[in-house]
Length: 285
Image (cartoon, rainbow, N blue to C red; front, side):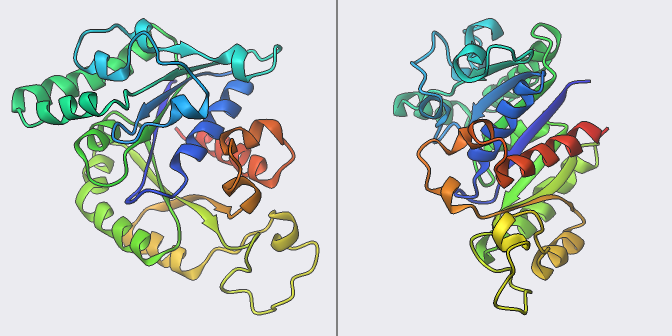
């Protein structure tokens, strides 16, 4: 059964794109057919991440009804993954040209265009499933409450609400849980909190009383991270479960090609965290 998974956040800078790309690459390496969609239409970045040339057609073109699903899917399996990989990785890019962004923005002011865009969002999902035999559809969305993000969430089976433990993230997450996510969960969408760049590897967890941590604790290995009381309180308050907590890894955060960390360094604790996330998503029905 195909799973459509959207990464969303209240604000930017939470690591959505890094997590979405690592998840997609490792799913494909595991043997799945994966389609990674860049629907952060205001600041698309997957083209730069994967060093791809402008494609023949963009997601924008599909949304306007001027391109087919085959036109927007770029097979990057051989470019990224080892030769013996049984899976496939396809990427669809959004056009970062400001004129194209203005064109999209101008059309969503018309109710008839809004309905057509939503139909095409649904059509894109269905064609990836029926025509392209997708196992996973991974969507990197724009942060915040924006038209394109809401549509992406509407077609998703699972929403991974990515956040850091700052006041803005926590307060914004509460707001979106009350105003947005509840509407989707009523119709069967599963929403989870995904904490990124938490304490425990580069920094000591906030509830760690001993200021000196031994070599076999989270500080050294990243294997055992303490759930902060703030995150637990948030999860309880908004009735959204925690699916994973990923600590801050400065070697990833400041790497130029951080999206390949899980592939290039399979023993890195970050890669282990992504594999754990994959297992939970596989088990989710």
